[in-house]
Image 1 (tube, rainbow, N blue to C red):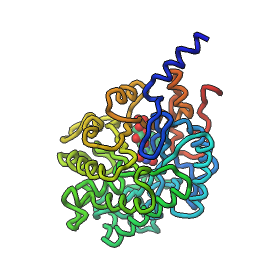
Image 2 (spheres, rainbow, N blue to C red):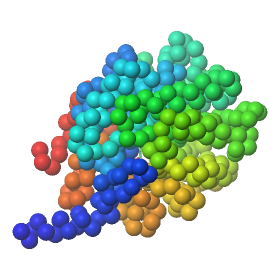
Image 3 (cartoon, rainbow, N blue to C red):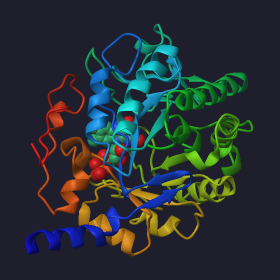
Image 4 (cartoon, rainbow, N blue to C red):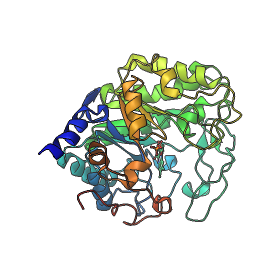
Length: 376
Ligand SMILES: Cc1cc2nc3c(=O)[nH]c(=O)nc-3n(C[C@H](O)[C@H](O)[C@H](O)COP(=O)(O)O)c2cc1C
């Protein structure tokens, strides 16, 4: 008996394993699964599959799963084999996933994604992708045809921006119809929202460019539109302010004030969470002015909504951030890929499996469904 008591007591007192409420989402622990594109959607309709339902169900003991980036429209696509949420077939496919997660008592939010200029003509019948301005991010993308270079995108007209806002509204409604518990807006990592935020990508001189208010306008129009179809206490968003010299965006003296503007305005909405990524890429902050070594510490006092921390954290670092009051939950990425029972491993202080990068995006069950659990 004695040998079982110590781990049990430890598990009960670990901050990561205590329940918490993110808006309407009642998490049974604070170990969140970060959004992870896995390119397993190997069908022409971008429809989530039964294999994906098995993968997510394996990880249902997370306090909250945030789905892989899910494109809101054909125009939003940028990578092969990534799921969508614009068609009835996709909604039915996602229903397999949400039912499988709910059957195990888990919660799952859908990450809504638009790649903007980080896309390729091959997704658009040879036409360029769309962006706030006609500025090439000059980045190498992944494709079934190799690693092609990005192109100069088409600058969205104001009417086209309204259409994209409508696509997000429809996608949010579809996510609710598919049984998701909430959504996360993918407003980070150099994709469409981040392109509007960054002066490197946004050179507009209309109401969508220039001032902080103007560069954030598209994001808040999308948020308002999403609020027409679902409650804000089921909506979160993701920011990665220290995305430096990656995906065609970078950090400069304007970055922190710009992101402060976004967070302060978002406070008015009563959102479920703000998901903040810390600098975690190697050499991410070298030679950058205006960078923050600790994103959470900077934004915690500014944000009235709960915060999920992410980026290069392990169990001890996640717990330390919770104990220091820097966040309310911790999202793990690569650790969830390799450990379907990450929560159980944290609870019992067990060693973790190492992720195999070669199978992150390659398709098939290998490196997807076959990581061992402690019980196996
Ligand atoms: C294979 C892989 C796929 C990813 N896909 C997404 C994605 O779809 N959306 C997103 O916002 N971030 C994505 N990310 C970033 C992760 O959510 C996370 O921020 C990153 O892995 C850092 O967290 P970690 O150090 O715990 O792994 C991806 C990362 C990896 C490794």
